Amino acid sequence: MPPRNSAAVDLLLELLSIPGKSGEEGEVAKFIVERLRKAGVPDSAVSFDQANRHSPIGGQVGNLIVKLPGSVKGPRRLLMAHIDTVPLCVGAKPVRKGNTISSADPTTALGGDDRSGATVILNTILTLLEEDLPHPPLTLMWAVQEEIGLVGARYVTASKLGSPKMCFNWDGGAANVATIGATGAFHLEITVRGKAAHAGAHPEDGVSAIAIASMAISDLVANGWHGLIVKGKKTGTSNIGVIRGGAATNVVTDRVDLEAEARSHDPAFRQKIVEAIIAAFAKAAKSLRSASGERGQVEFDIQDKYESFRLDKKELSVATAVDAIHRRGLEPDLRISNGGLDANWMTAHGFPTVTLGCGQSGIHTTAETLDLDQFEHACEIALDLATTN
Image (cartoon, rainbow, N blue to C red; front, side):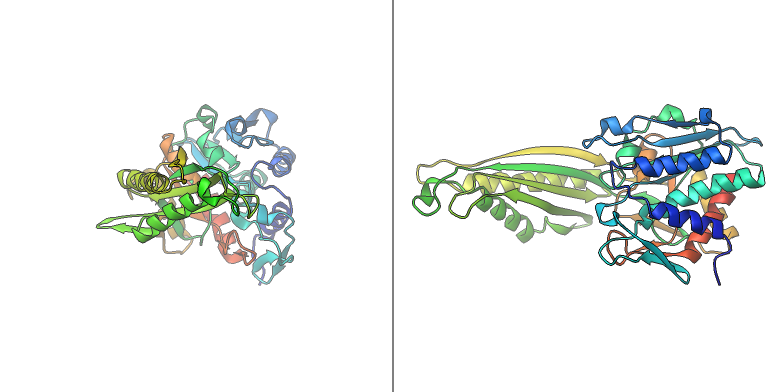
């Protein structure tokens, strides 16, 4: 049996078909704006902020924000989702098989993360307007560049949002999932500088940046500071995710660039993870010398990607979301995430935000699928949240 909301599914299939990796969301935003105008949303209610101007990669557009007055009194509500995908989704050809959507191209991911969330928001406003449903003041936000570090949410122009009192974000998971907290993270860029030398004739004259990096990583692994980290009651994770360096086997490599991350729900422990990474690289650089006694050097650029948060179950956004899930006949599943969400930055800006699921699974892989039953539940929950006073 097909989902009852076939219009939402058609909308979803259209959005999934538009390429739009982080920084290249222009066509996705254009599609959404055209649908809003066609439905009667005035141009004065539609705006873009300049979040992309603060991004390390630039980007075609900032966050798309729509602010609507209410037809009934009540606190303003924010409904949001991000519109960018990971690069693996470019070229996806969505195909529906029963109550599941996947990519017909086996070499691409689907992009349900987070075009399904973006569709939930768009379907909500289109339904409100088509059926002339009463609603409190609403702000709709389609965020950019979530996948590369929550850039859109981090640099959102808060004054454009209209001071919402309840905030709801749609992203991964089943429709009954309400994520009320998430970890924090640091991003580390590490430059290891050694000394070049001929690797065959006089390797002892060089200082291998690759050797320094490998010694440091080995130290982190051996001492429990890489991967899952458990130190007493404190937990976190770290990962060396990118290594670049070297050009030839007959040259002692004089520079290696690495990118790493450190995560923990505990800000103090997250800092300790960073300190352990710094110490391991400093120790490795100090321990390796050339024949003449020269050592390598290590430089760090450490960025606070996002802070952890945890909402109280009595928080208005949480309680309202739980009620909406219950009204769909579902059992709310409140979770704390070990990944970052746009809600991290929205909450940091003073807008406590609950993240709800809309059916994606296997995200960021070619096995990604979207469950249409869960997607339909998400659409109905969103409509409930946008209209119930």
